[in-house]
Amino acid sequence: MPEGGTGGAAAGGRSGGARLARRPMPRGTVVAPSILAADYARLGEQVAEAEEAGAAWFQVDVMDGHFVPNLSIGLPVLASLRPVTDAFLDVHLMIDNPEGFLEPFAEAGADLITVHQEVCPHLHREVHEIRRLGCKAGVAIDPSTPAGTLSEILPFVDLVLVMTVNPGFGGQSFIHAALRKVRQVRHMAGELGLQGLRVQVDGGIDPDTAALSVDAGADVLVAGSSVFRGAGTIAENYRALLRAVAVEV
Image 1 (cartoon, rainbow, N blue to C red):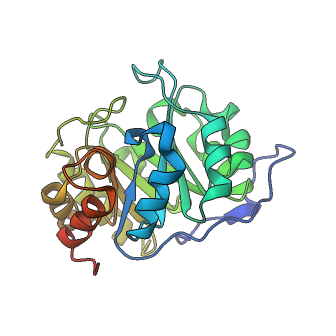
Image 2: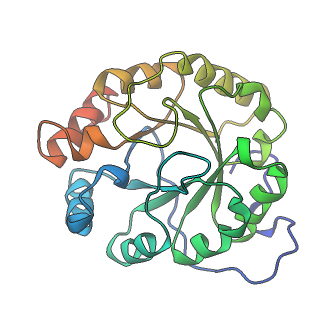
Image 3: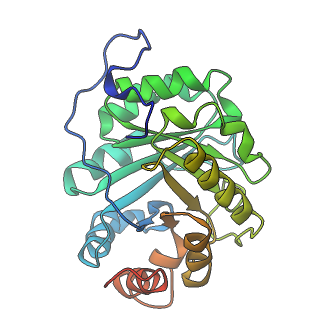
């Protein structure tokens, strides 16, 4: 946990909340398949195939059709996935008013919940609520949001997600200008002594952009289409990403 974080005992004042056993956050450079690109009719099977190839972290993308122009999976999918995998489950809430959904997603089995800076006027409170529920806390920024807006919240989060596409749809092209923000976030974390802060990128990740992202300072790479819809099998696609970032296969 980053220096200055308050952990599960963070203030928030809300009652209730799940106390499920949470999976530990995998260490080192991680490739995290996004199930947004999976075949939902074969979701358990495809997650298992990625796990056999080494995946220990999966992202669950939740979209509401308001904050982003698309609808995607929600609580039932997460709840059905949790019993069939021991992997770390990262829930990325691309929704307006996320505060009303933090506890339900925690109860459904999230290990990490990420909210967007753009929709949280009381971001500090929401981060503390995520921690109170026993989950790791993440904050995401869109391509048009300056990295500097995170300066006050960095000591209280476990992960920063720098979007490398505009959120809402899979299969978009990587926005190379986002790499500058990855460097900025890593620099700010260093100045604050936050050695444990994870920096995640999401969108347009393939072997080439994965390597660029790691060079810029990212250590969690979310990949959807390139894993589940690439030219090879899921295992082949996943291992190609690992090799691109010099992770032993």
